[in-house]
Amino acid sequence: MVWHFRFGYAVFTLLVFRLFWGLLGGRWSRWSTLPLGFRPFTSYLQGRSTPEQLAGHNPLGSLSVLAMLFFLSLQVATGLVSDDEISNSGPFSSLVSSTLVTWATSWHKHWGKLTLIFLVSIHLSAIAWYHWRQHQLLLPAMWHGYKNLEVPVDASRDDLPSRVMAALIFTLSVAVVFYLVSLGA
Image (cartoon, rainbow, N blue to C red; front, top):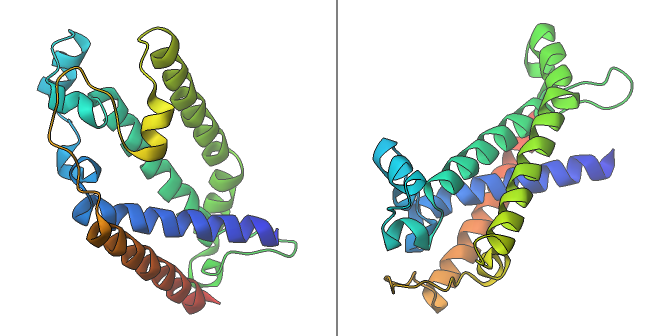
């Protein structure tokens, strides 16, 4: 369980980082570039997306990102207030009602876990589908941040100052999570 807590805090840190990076990061990492809404979604399904809508996440990918971030956040939040009634409890379990602790523990152990397995499975299936059916290599693009496109679009910022900013935001995220967890300890 020690490693379970450590991995949970690591996911919490990455979620905090992603929240801030979505506001301050490179162009295709920003929340404002996610093609959300009815028009981009229907254009994508009809095969009429603009190159900018396909440079980062496509509309379905954007919905997937939001769903995964939401349910990861819910899993982290419920883990922070869970209690297995044996020897392990989240750092905030003593600060909330026993009803909330019971619900959070149940969600965290059952539906939350199954929901995340389902979302990750769909995500991996989509990557495989794009690889074999659409002949788009998304894994290398996820790894190094560059995607081959038929039409060139503006590149994202990837220079020393942006990398330093990412390191600072990550360090700040670690500090925020450490501070929040220590409040409940």
